[in-house]
Length: 187
Image (tube, rainbow, N blue to C red):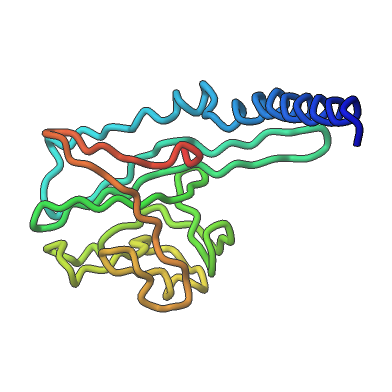
């Protein structure tokens, strides 16, 4: 190779590297969270100052939604948290998909729904919520075929082995507030 072609080869290589770096800048910038995502990362806080031991509450986080796009009807399930406080004072929070005023009950996977439940929580006959307490559908008029598979241990594990486990949500206790760290894509 002559000196001139060597210099030309180096110049092309340098320009190619500079071009790749300049092209990578927007790509790398797109990996950063958007403003909308950053705004959604504000954690939800639940006031627990009046939350007694051995109780539970269903907190609606996002309503279900139905809309039309052309000739197609589109639906998005809502989101709720099942917040349980046991007899020792520990909190457990599970994320649940909802439709209107009911919880969409799973079959084998979340997203594969088999029925509805208006009152999911510790069994009504449980006087104390402890390690032996089961989470069940307390609807008396629910005649869904899979209802006898809808029971979980207090840690969210399905006891029938036929239905998916409940989705635990990470929380932090801060004085009279429970900070719920639900991922932003769920809210």
